[in-house]
Image 1: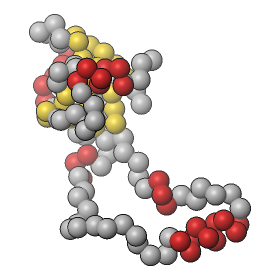
Image 2: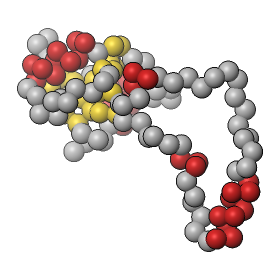
Image 3: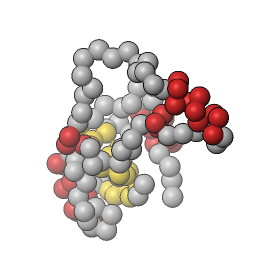
Length: 121
């Protein structure tokens, strides 16, 4: 994950980072090392055990990832990720931020907690 900071023309500091979802579910990978354990795991996984209601929602616009713009009280997402975002000037980042859509915070995190949860480099 690449991360950048910039200050917009209004004087607000933004943290920008890219989010790229995994292509597969984690539970499909073998976690046990022995052949016997792998056989038990395959046997256990033969049927679908998850309860689903309706179709799985797919977000084709965000399948390749998005840029997240965070300034504590505001969160925005831009998809698809612009190719030059990691090296472009701050003015271009501000334009990308203006084009991004408002987003809600993940549940369980408040806006004061969000800045601390973003990894610093």
